[in-house]
Length: 86
Image 1 (tube, rainbow, N blue to C red):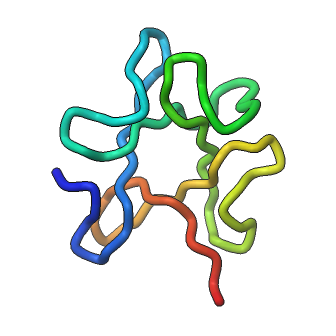
Image 2 (cartoon, rainbow, N blue to C red):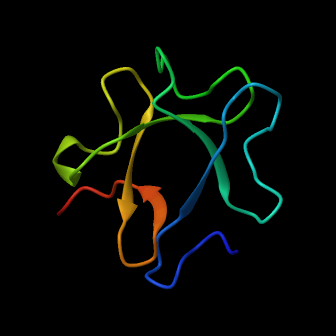
């Protein structure tokens, strides 16, 4: 896998956060713990990003908790960062 998918979006690899993983996956994508409880701040203790899964892009790039918002790209079946319209 590459950092970017065929639509030019940055791809997120979901990790469970139970052991140290770091920010980058072996395939070059970003690691993220999705919907951690609570998703406080940008980084999870395992080194990955904290991410909140959202249904649409209206919420912007960051969640109120400081985590990044991610959305499922149904065409590529990959998690990607939310890119606000505009």
